[in-house]
Image (tube, rainbow, N blue to C red; front, side):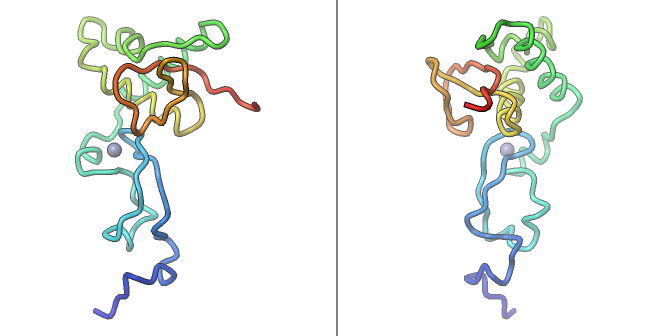
Length: 139
Ligand SMILES: [Zn+2]
């Protein structure tokens, strides 16, 4: 019971300034004191995201986003609903939030950018309609 949580140097794995991308929702989340002991293994921002970890459908949404973008011209963008329609058919609306999550995860790995009104936005905080386009590398 002599733990001193005020001294991050005693726990090199859990620096208070650390950030990570949630493996489910694709949003950035920050180190918390409650994760000091196991920060290296933390992959989800919340219990809800831990319960809804990505499945085959979610991986298919990621692949479909990249496939749709690859078929379009340079600089083209898509709406998350387009991938949802390809994967979900008539039930595509049920996949809308999952398609947005898939887009955020692809931002985290550097594959795509999320834009609003043509400007790149932070996927963690963007609200409302978004567009997805391939990341422009080597600018
Ligand atoms: Zn999350």
